[in-house]
Amino acid sequence: MTQQNLSYFSICSGIECASVAWHPLGFKPLGFCEIEPFRSAVLNYHYPEVTNYGDFTKITKDDIGGNSPDILVGGTPCATFSIAGLREGLESDRGNLALEFILLIKRLNPTWVVWENVCGVLSSNGGKDFGSFLGGLAELRYGFAYRVLDTQFIRTQRFPRAIPQMRRRVFVVGHIRDWRRSAEVLFDKKVLSWDSPPLRRKQSETSRTFIKSVKNDSKLTDSVICFEQRSPDNGSPRIQTEERSPTLTAMTGGNRQPCIVKSDNALRKLTPIECERLQGLPDNYTQIPYRGKSKEECPTSKRYEACGRGMSVNVMEFLGTKIKEVNSKYEK
Image (cartoon, rainbow, N blue to C red):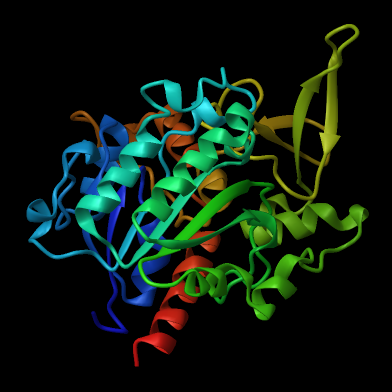
């Protein structure tokens, strides 16, 4: 295991926000696991040299060369753990993928584990589902720590003012030898000092703050981020203006997605590029040739969904940076 080139294996990879964050850190992907066709096409377009193994429940150490990865990273499907979902928890097939992740840890024996999910996992089935997941880690003798991280507060070298999206997710970090190493990644004094919101301008200047952070488009300097809701009484539109974007979801691109309010109070939807920037992705990262059509004909609905299901790059950069620092500290 080298200090400057940690290896990782990614499951439920989506469009690989982890790789966007970790490539500048020198991390090396051993493989991806993604089954959805469009997201798989995004992976093949950006990472043609990395094998997409598809179904992670069938992966063994022999499949990836016989060596354990330094890091196993992934976020198993979250719908059954979501407050807005049916709360089927681990009793459903999709919820059971959380336990399949535990079984994969047993087969691959990584040094580090990074698992992401929605905050609803904390209360799913009265907390028993999350307890089962943590219990599985403990049975495999992994020390762990967990914490809710919010995209809008996570400042890194590449994102010194964070990203203006309200996106709270639970992250579990595990280490094969010592829970203290996991805790150092999530809870050292320097990290805790980042909980305060990044300095932003007063509400009257919200538009410039958002555009400077995300758009960098001088033609839209008087625009602000907002979203449209329907009032409960008569269903008429009601606009809520925010300095930060609401959470992007798989439904982004539909009627309830975040919108832009222009200076004349006209509404328009966020573009796919703006959604990419709200996750910290490069512009047009999800615009790819797809099903025999050119990049310019890439379906926007697929781009919106892929962004909404992704992890925030600044959060993954923060986790990767801390793992690298802690790993270097103990592995000298």
